[in-house]
Structures are given as structure tokens and as C-alpha cells.
Length: 225
Image 1: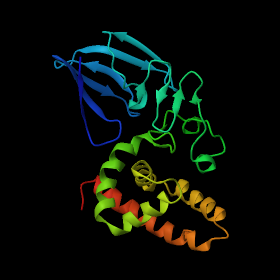
Image 2: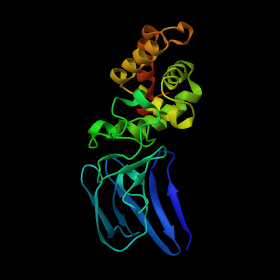
Image 3: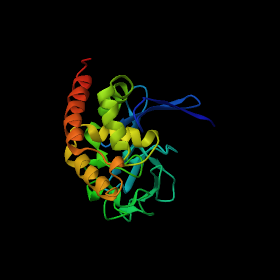
């Protein structure tokens, strides 16, 4: 039987699943993990309990809902699909190397720097603070499309990570109050391009503009233009 989903524009943000005449709504925590499925009356039908790395215990009504830990898909083999690679809750790590290599840290297999309580990694390539992920993406995409300063910062950061919409989304979120992470990445990027100064990113420019982008994004999240 066909299942339809109601989602927001935020990444991995599922609201409702509809299978035939059965409607279930998602209840999630700050990581985006599905804690329960409830019916239209608010009665809990299925409950999910996780340890820090996503090992799951399910109780209640049987459901084939695939979206569980951090809102990602449980493929029923004990693995979760994080777009670029698979994550194993049992092993508490990814099962393949980070495709961005040293740009993601010295451990090619670690999941969110072993801090799954505070961070998520929806792309499988770049961990982000869970508490700001939704709001940063919503306000950030607007600024990326409408503000030249903010877009310039994001494009510069994308040059450090990777190409494509997932990288742009990660960069938008990384700009948000996270200079402590972005600036060391810029230093590493410049060191790798020591013989190609035309490809380097000016750190002073980045610091000033990331600060300005932070303010723009904060204003946008508060409902200001």
C-alpha cells in the first residue's frame, strides 16, 4: 500500500505519514529523532527509545515507518543511511571513510566527533549543531538567495567543503555562530593551496563577513528583514 508523507522544507523534518486511511503524526526530539507516532487524537501508537548513538527499542503498534534516529532512514539491517554513507549505531561510527577526507577531521569513520547528544550529520560529510539546524536552514536559504554578503560567505565556505546543494546547506548552518569551526577550516584550506594563492580565502575578510552573516541570520531567525 502506498504511503504519503507531509514534510517541511527543513532537512529530515517529517510531520505526518498517511497509509491508506491510517494517519500517524511524528513526535521528535531536538536531534530530530522520532520519539513516537501518534494518531489524530494525540494518542501514542508507537514509541521509539534510543541510546546516544541510536540503538533503538520500539514498543506499541507495529509500524514500517523508516524514519527514526535523527530523522534518518533505518534500512532494517541495523544501519542508517546518511546520504553520503551508512552509519552503524552498534559500532557507533560510519562504516565507510569520510568522502571529504581530512577536511572532516583525522578520524575518517567517527560520527559527529563522538558527540551525538549535541550534533547531527544529515549529509554524512559535515556535522552540525542539532539545536540550530532547522532554524539556520530556514533563514539561511532566504539570505543566500537575497543577500550578497551572506551568499559570499557561504560560497567561500563551500569552497572548503564540497560542491552541490547539500554542501551549501551545510555551509549556511556552519556560518551560524560557528566561526570557531569555520576559521580553522579556512586555515587548513589555505595551507593546502599554499602554492596557489589565487585560490586562498582571505581570513580577515572571512572573519569580518562571517560576523556580519551571523548578525543577518540572527535577525532573520527573529523575524527581521
